[in-house]
Length: 241
Image (cartoon, rainbow, N blue to C red; front, side, top):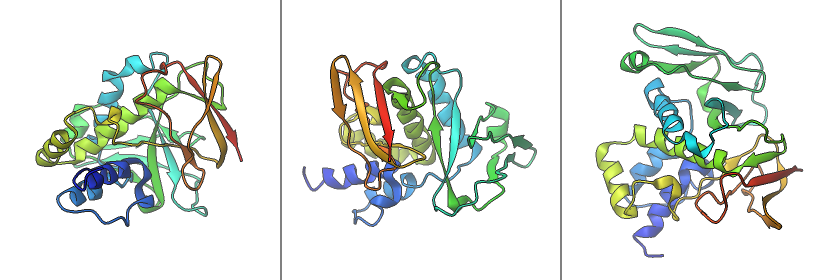
């Protein structure tokens, strides 16, 4: 990999892994991409709305997924996950967002709220929590994930990242990647995070059982989202530690 491309790959990989590579030195202006993309703290409503739009645009990846849900997850082991409450708040907006028992929530789509520069407010320090898209097709077993669902989640992550970036930065990345479809680009790795530590993750495709790489601490895995040899209906079996 060339010196020019290596910082780009590191910067874009931070979209998913965040602090794992945050201390890796990168050159400007790509360092600006790192700062804009590595954090998955709760965003403004306008940014999160971009994720809802991506869900609708690419819904054919997971046609049996009934809704776009987001999941809150802690950044620290001792984070208090009890009584989480969300609110969309702006100058003319005050709207409670129910948080389900599994720590997921649904955002109501509204251009009026986005125009109000509304923000997502959590009743606990945002720095101790992260969000992730949580797209589940009906009929998928609890211990499995469907590949098309994960491809759609990647589209949502990329959409929210782009919504925070300036036109200049997006143009820079598009130019360097020679593509606007970052989610499916070979230089971008977007692991799937799991609430519990994994022992292994295995892609099931026909008679094949393909072991997938786990993240360093085992709280996620790397799905082959850009490998078109595997169909959207392929399943990934998760075995927890």
